[in-house]
Length: 256
Ligand code: IPE
Ligand code: IPE
Ligand code: MG
Image (cartoon, rainbow, N blue to C red; front, side, top):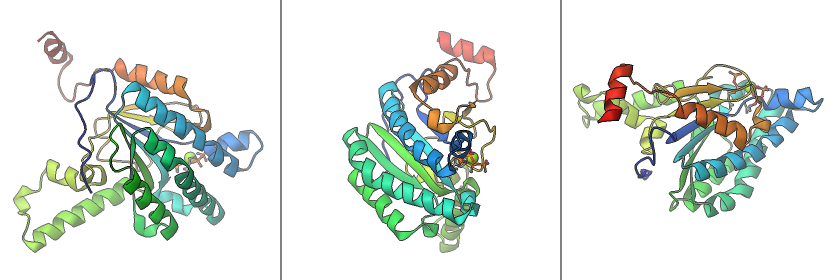
């Protein structure tokens, strides 16, 4: 797959280049209203649209959203079926609109476990938006961070066995490049947002979240809007990302 070729970040300190969102809380949002969980999943589609628009408006270059995890296969079959149906409908309905906004779509996750209709819709969306570069939208479906790491390890081991990669050449760069986002040429996450009140990663992008700033909100995903998103962005802009350095070093760097 072609690398995304991102331009340099507009203002790296203020705007996260790559935002990752765990869109959680749909089921509880519905149950609080006396509605079936399905209603929460349906209500979760509109915030995806507004979030994409807001990323474009704010200059975020990459948005990765968690739509269905490798662990979500353990949900009741009716709920899994409904989520697959909603994904298929959304892909059929939204891709032209997203493409019109300059959004390029990518999908990460174990495609082998997905219904063929979804895989075909994903491939169509990737093809149709191939030329776009305003926002890279990565949708994680059937994705798990441990699965990603296992696939990357297997790929490098295969290259070593084939004699095309020296064991000594396996390093952080090489393994990162073999993982889902690395293969797409996309950078690690800057800002991780999770809605719905839980404070955990739930096996999302374990490698690429190594130095992400974490931001949690009790707001359920169906209620996530531009105002809540801006709170996360403002919080991010105030963080000092030291990546191992001291605060004094960071200050000295600013002056230079
Ligand atoms: C997130 O909402 C959507 C998916 C995981 C597919 P949930 O369905 O997890 O909603 P809660 O956490 O049960 O409220
Ligand atoms: C994480 O949410 C996965 C998605 C949002 C797609 P879950 O609701 O499945 O996470 P856990 O099970 O509460 O950790
Ligand atoms: Mg949940």
